Amino acid sequence: MDENEIDDAIPNGKSVSDTLREERERQGVSRKEMSDRTKISERHLIAIDEGDYSAMPSRTYILGFVRSYANALDMDGNAMAQRLRDEMGLAEKARPERHLDHLEPGDPERNPSSKLTWLVLAGVIVLVAVVLVMWKGFFVPAAELPPLEDEQAEVAAPAPAAEEESEAPAATSEEVVFTATVDGIWVKFYDRSGTQLFQKQMALNERYAIPADADGPQIWTGRPDALTITVGGRAVAPLAAEQTVIRDIPVDAAALRARPAGPGLPARNP
Image (cartoon, rainbow, N blue to C red; front, top):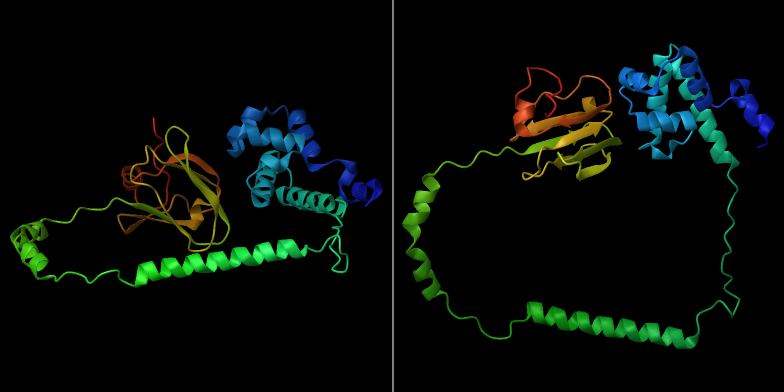
């Protein structure tokens, strides 16, 4: 694809990043102010302005950030997102095709030598022998096991202690579990110091339990509305009722339970 075709697909020959940056500067809006309006970090705003989308978590988030950026400037966010799709599609089509040099079976220089074939065969035989020896060690007892009468007599003595323990109430679990209700939700969990606990695009019905020893666990995602939450096995209200970007939100059991009834974000950690 030549430059004329790319210019025809992008109005005025300008990229989405140039269009958004120039309009923001024309309106006199700083990146900090834009970050406050859209809740998009300044790092990602810089990446959009420079057309460097490699720092974004996924293509879905790139399009969502660009749509929010455009809407904040009173532009058509959906149209700008479609232009970005076109740009990204053109960039993928413009990449040169890679032609791999496949091996030809008839070429004796590329076929394995007979010596290598025998070495591989010998290795397979040794591996099978090792597996058989290990299997015999696991499943064939080396000696007759002693009778269990003495052990049963010893175990019978501490029975009263076991009865006392059974009378004690079971400890209440405070485990916090997040479950994805749609496929492909990007989410990141980390502790108070910023150490990552979990990050991926969760599949439909995939669950993640926050470690009990996590210090001040927090969440960052753009789909809090698509995550169900349980605390101690009981469902609690979601973090949001609609799609929005949240970050540095505490998700320990106490913070989640301290919220008012209904969807809502816990108070940020001091």
